Image 1 (tube, rainbow, N blue to C red):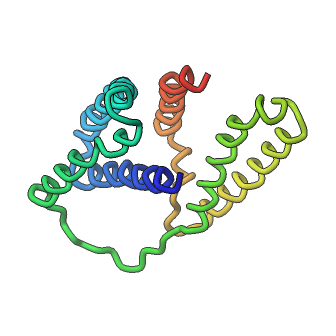
Image 2: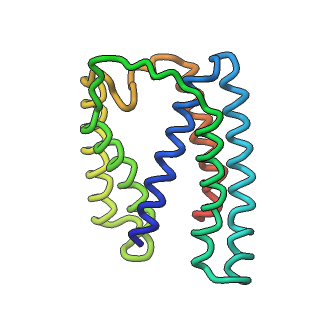
Length: 185
């Protein structure tokens, strides 16, 4: 379980890193196309990953599912070291928003924990569900407050004043529900 947690944290970091690299090396006019490429790769991986995992589990052992990506990761690291050339200009005075990061992470985890336990460990409508809702509202409110005050916020909430950004977020949530909702159901 610990190794799986480390793998999940590393994958989350890699996803954020890919977006950051795309934002720094790709012109704004071209970013949509490259985001589409990334989405296509994720769509193929979402379908083929479980199928390949089933084949590997049947043919070898379930533990091999964790090792199948090691050669791909090594190849990616080698290619990145050889081909990726990023400028190393650093900005002075940047402060990381650690409190915002922690609060946003907890606010995102609470609904996932609720969905995991509700219906099996307790009823969907129960005092435990109410406790999860109250905890989410408190932590999410704290995250919004901290992010509005932070000089370098993890989530720039003021961007919600832009209609295009709001509709993009709504579309992303819809796409996420469409992709992962049936699996959760």
